[in-house]
Length: 359
Image (cartoon, rainbow, N blue to C red):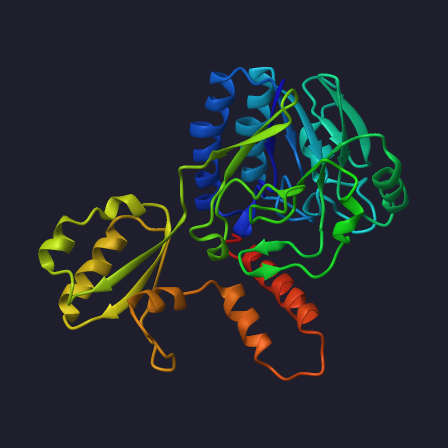
C-alpha cells in the first residue's frame, strides 16, 4: 500500500495572498493530484498545519480550500487523514477547537476526513503507525506516554524537535529532545519547512516556497510504501522566488533583448546588481520585468559595507530576512539568550507576513 504524505500546506499564507494561493494550487492541480491518480494512490496523510493562521481565514481562500482541495480528495476517492498542527488550533493549550473541524466536516458526516487532535495508533495495510498531532498542554501526558510505550515502530507527527533546521541555517534549540525517538525505526514529521533527516527522524519539508527563506530549497511531497517502509520524494517543479544577476559588463543589450522575462510571471524576484555601467539598459531590464507581471520585485545593489571576494559572494549576500536577523543577533552583545531572541523575532516576522495583503 502506498500513502501520500503532505504537510504544512498553510492555506491562507502571506495574509491570504491571492498570488500565493494561485501558486499553491498550480502545484496541487498540476502535480499532486495527477500523480496520485496516475499511480492509483488512494490514501493520504496530512502531517499538520493545513492552514496558515490560528485565528481566521479569508472566505475566498476557505472556499478554494474546500472546493479545489478537500473536494478533490472526495472526488478521487482518496482516504484522507489529517493531524492537527499548531497553526490549525485556535487555542495554544488544546487542539479541540481547530480550523479542520470547521472547514472539513459536515452535518451529515459524508465525505469527511479522519481528523486527529489526540494521538492514536492506526493500522494501514496491517502496519501500525502512531499518528501524533501537535503536542499541547491538554494532550501532553498521553502523547509522551504513547511515545514511550506504544507498540509501534513508526511515528508520523507534527513535532518540534531540538537540533533540526527549521529552515536552512536556522536550527531549533527548543522542543522535544531527540532521544525521545530513539526506540523507533522511523519518525516522519511536519512543522519545519526545511527537508532534513538524521536517518531515523525525517522532517519532510513543506510542498512549496512561501518566504525568501525557502529560496532554492527543495520542495515537494512524499510517498510512503507500507510494504518496503521506504519513502519516495516527488519534487514540486514550480518556484516562487528567483534571483537575477545583473552585470552589464558581462551581458549586453542583445542578451537582455532575448531574455525570457515571461518565466517570472506571478513570482517574487530579486535583482542582484553586480555591475551597473549603463543606467538605460538597467532601467530597460527592470521595465521588462514589470511588464512580465511579477508579483514583487526588489533590487539589491548596495554592498559598500561588505567585503566581497567574487560575484558569487554578492549573490549570497542577498539573503532572506530571517537569516539577516539571525546573523545580526549573533553579533550583538546582550545579556539575553540569543536563541530565545531569535525565536521571538521569528514570531514577529511571521506575524508581519500574515498582515501582508489583507484587504
